[in-house]
Structure formats: structure tokens, C-alpha cells
Image (tube, rainbow, N blue to C red; front, side, top):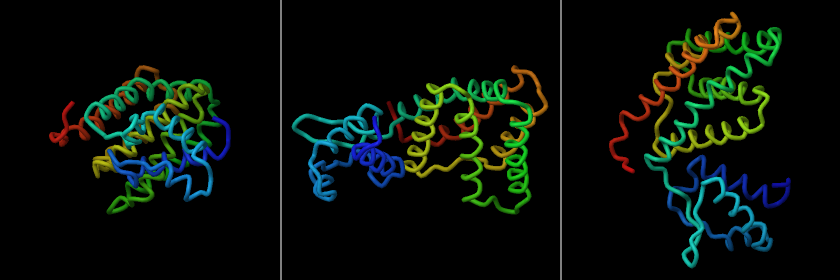
Length: 219
């Protein structure tokens, strides 16, 4: 999709869905969007097509356009992809980037995490900022465009799921310590097996904490 009006509309609607400004099952009025921008409905329709392609909405003939709901399958599918791909992109980044590059980037991030742990109460804004910085470092530097696109999609969906369900990342101090451990394994050139075990364990713990209070959802 080229950089154009339809892309601007796509990104705007996507972020409204991710941030739960457009709620699950909410109807989207393409004519109202076009009128608000003083444009034809053509770029709006094209943007909606891409939103449906990426799973954010459903276009139902003679009924309208609706934001897709978040259900248990959505959550399971998202964590399943993350569990398979995230350890791979962490390993790829550790292998293809030079030691000096990794130290220059990851040591300052480790220091930020360490400073957060020293606070009596974890700062909400800084936690999410550093958490995003940690994860996007690996997507940005794994050297694989397909993994980059897929993992960004996964992280966008995780953000949406958390906002829709009003669930934050659990056990923040434990999450920070696990991030530091992953950084240390990389910088100390420890084995792939240890890095993979730590990465997988980190995701599985978050997944467990996330699921244990979702009794209201069913497939």
C-alpha cells in the first residue's frame, strides 16, 4: 500500500481500533468519514479493504462495516504467533549484529530497566516506553522483513487486547528482570539454548498471567 490518502485513513482507523477508541462490534460509517475529510468514498473503501485484510474489521454486505471483536481465539492466536516468532527474532538479532552494536544499544536499555527496579513504584509511562523499546529493538534489527511485519502486527494486537480487556502487563518487576536476563545472555555470548529457554519462558509467564482471569471469554 503506497503512501497516500488511503494509507493515512488506514493508519488513523487502525490506531483508533488498537487504542479502543473504536470499540469491538462498533459500526464504521464510510460515508461519514469521507464527508469529514471532504473526499470521495473511494480512498475510504480502499482503507477499509486493508483493515479487513489485516483482521481489524469485517465488511458485511448490506449490513455495513464493523470492528472485529476480541475473543479467546484472538488472544490465543496472538500469543501462539508471538511464542513461535519472538524467540527467533531475538536470536537472529543476537547473531547478525556486532558485539559493539549490541553493547551500545542494549547496555543503556539495561541501565534504564535497572533504574526502574530501584523505584518504590514502577513508573507506568517509563515501563511501557522501555518495554516497547526492548521488543522493537529486536523486530527492527532481526534482518527479516517478514518477521518484522508479522511481529509488529502481533504487538499491535497485544496492545489492542490489553486496552479492550483493561488488562495491563502483569508482574512488572518480574518482566523487567526477565528483560535484563535476556540482555545479559546476549551480551555474554551465552548459548542459543539458554537464550531460547529464557525468551520462551518470558512469554509463557506473561501468557499464563494474562489468561488466568479470562473466564468470561469462550471460543
